[in-house]
Image (tube, rainbow, N blue to C red; front, side, top):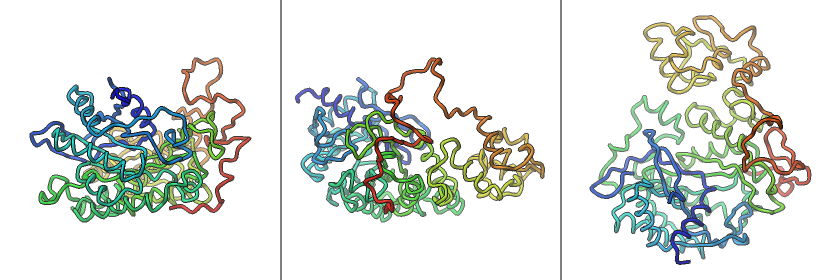
Length: 473
């Protein structure tokens, strides 16, 4: 295929299922070169200072030797194939940059011939960008599981962020749906990246944002990026991320959240991303093509991830053995509070920072504002909205100067009903006579059923090929 723009169309479309695209945590300065950190393949991400950053999101190739059942680019799928030459993609990236379409590159790939063969070609493209074209913009590179340590290290010296997709939440699911991929091939590069970052002083603390920035920052042990030693070569200064597919296999939310917690602790991940499985395969091991993606479940998992990283929650608190799935009606923080209603109400003016962060409706910023405010005067209920507290939620779980504003009693059923009513949450489909915008995720087959937002099919048990006692990573 000679037309580079045809390749762009094919390979940008193939990359759209990868959601782990974020630029936060990097501060690469322009040193007199180009860059500081058709619109096909351009995605938008956000930097650590809140700026929206445009990235060319592309696959190097969609020719793959693997036959992963959940993947649109699997070997047995009848799709149009293409591969870039390193020079083609480097020139294309620079052309997009000069036209002000993009500020950086998000590069992933299928596995053509072997992991090392594909990774070497990706590395050649990145070297052309950095050294021949002088591109100093942001680069996020996906590491192919099974790649050699030498190639991974060279890619890390050029890239701002690295990521290795864990794909599925358990060994059993990986063995069933992607038997050619091995657990060691996924965890080995993760471990190498973590060890290299630790050696170079880029990692401190146990890995979660809560411990690094809420608890540890006050002790002065977080090293700002700008103050790190200039004598050390930069290696993936924005850290590493990973991604899990949700809904393709039978794991519970509890298992997924526990895996996320383990990844943050073991590999100091910057982010764990979740991708609701969009049916692209007719495999009997997967939900069929008419099944609605579990988008609400994905959203709740992101909220649970937020609690892990910023609020000091543990996986066992977010989803326990009695409640292995997250409540789709309420965010996980409210669900936890209702399950532990005996801990409430909490007095705003005496609660510790950790206790304030457990109260629904109070975020990290508003919690700190409350702590600062009460040094000068007692915080009253009327002050909370000005501080940034969502009082329509928080009022059920707090007292202000001894007074409770949550209504008649502190009962979980009553509070849940009031919160749902206040938020105007509608869990059912809109009536047929309403004007509803057509969505690609609408259920097209009425024979398919949905129960509590999770995929249920009367003619297919997607978990019947997985052992009930799933062993998580």
